[in-house]
Image 1 (tube, rainbow, N blue to C red):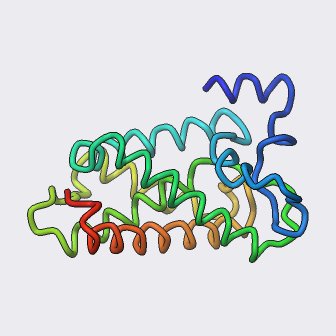
Image 2: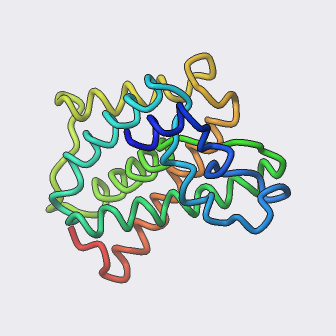
Length: 174
């Protein structure tokens, strides 16, 4: 919220948004900072609500530190991959890369961890995340255009792969 308020005054995206690999220069920190910015208040509130419900479901089982580390690692890798696909992208912002990576992790836990709490669509978190996943991938409702679907898919797959690796190596024990 603080970054959003500052961004409305001085356009932080010119300094912090993710960019395509051909134009990012040596500012690789942008792969980490881009997801902390948002296009507008609705965009930010939608991502905050989605992260709240993902956190409600996952954070207790993972622990706060693993939850944050998984999110940062997954979203950073997704942003890097996206920057090679959209090599000349001028601006990529928003926390949806976190949300879709966590959704990938949820899928992995549901398939591989019988003792993990079950994800249900008959709950507030399940209903909100399904709504978010659908609406966030319709270009008319998306703030980033048709590349949004690609980035969300990359982020989801990244979450699945890192979740699988984390479970294989015993880092994610849930």
